[in-house]
Length: 383
Ligand SMILES: Cc1cc2nc3c(=O)[nH]c(=O)nc-3n(C[C@H](O)[C@H](O)[C@H](O)COP(=O)(O)OP(=O)(O)OC[C@H]3O[C@@H](n4cnc5c(N)ncnc54)[C@H](O)[C@@H]3O)c2cc1C
Image (cartoon, rainbow, N blue to C red; front, side, top):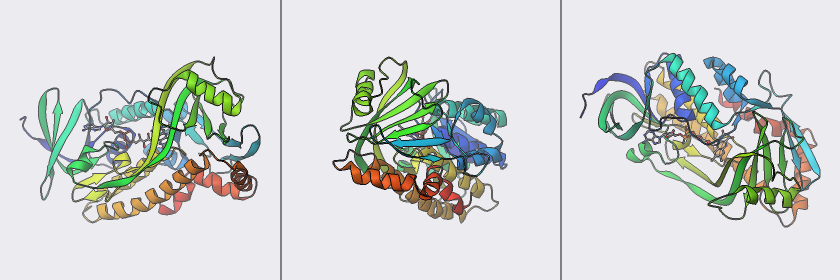
């Protein structure tokens, strides 16, 4: 085994969006860290899309907003329809400036920008092709073992943070229980050349047969998400475009397509986000339904709190406080993700649902809906 490396205050396992963001936040607050990431390149697919105003304000504090604004696209309005009739719309224009929009930015781009920003701060911070193997927790430090190009390496750190996604090995090694449920809901999604007239607006359709959403993407593309009645292992363009044509009449069959995938939906939460010197953030700590698109942003909010705690001189009590406080936020976001998902389910009597939505989107209540969609309701938790 290679000799132990010099001690570093924090080791993060996982260089996805949350681990990279946490590393930047820590370094900006004067805390050195290392990120162990098994992949060489950012995630190849484009999962998460929406960056919310609360996250953009944190980016402002870190001085990393500009490359996101250059690469992303500002969504200022969302319109809801039945099959073909408009139910109403919500505008984000009246949300607090300067970020009165949701920024559409594919996850590949988000990770690429975060990697570059981290590299600028500390070119040694990201250790690629490093596969976390396990840890030993001591009184004053944690020994972290990982494999890299055939060798076993070890780092001694003050705290170990698992940002290694929903199947987190850090969480498993720490024997932290992860409980929750899988919903019956399933979806297919694909990125297509934008042949609609929606411009920079998002559109949500609630036809009888189930939800269809479409969101503008940078470079003249649009993401389509279609509810299916079972999990489709190998989605194809024809299937997705014919569901859209049958349900809402849009024909995207001739549009260029760059990505297709299927996903199921779940909500899981770790029983604690802090246990001794082991901490969890992002999907390693919580997974919520991606309908409503807030999971990554939720991970960033937690990582931000964590970076504040770990930059304090004596953080010994604080991790438990992080755990309790962030669990409340997760519960709130999970509830509304579940609500969004339920509204998108196929319905035998859609009239009630449509009436309810018209009421929400055509009365002063729509300001509240805009706050929920932009995660502004979490301001009271203080970030
Ligand atoms: C279809 C879909 C759409 C979504 N849309 C949105 C959206 O619009 N907005 C939003 O906020 N969220 C969205 N989400 C959720 C979002 O994708 C996740 O919440 C986010 O990726 C979580 O980031 P993370 O860094 O915690 O974990 P991950 O992205 O899973 O990253 C974990 C990292 O850890 C690495 N890793 C794992 N194990 C090890 C190991 N043993 N050693 C070293 N490295 C390891 C992995 O390689 C990976 O890079 C969506 C999710 C899905 C499925």
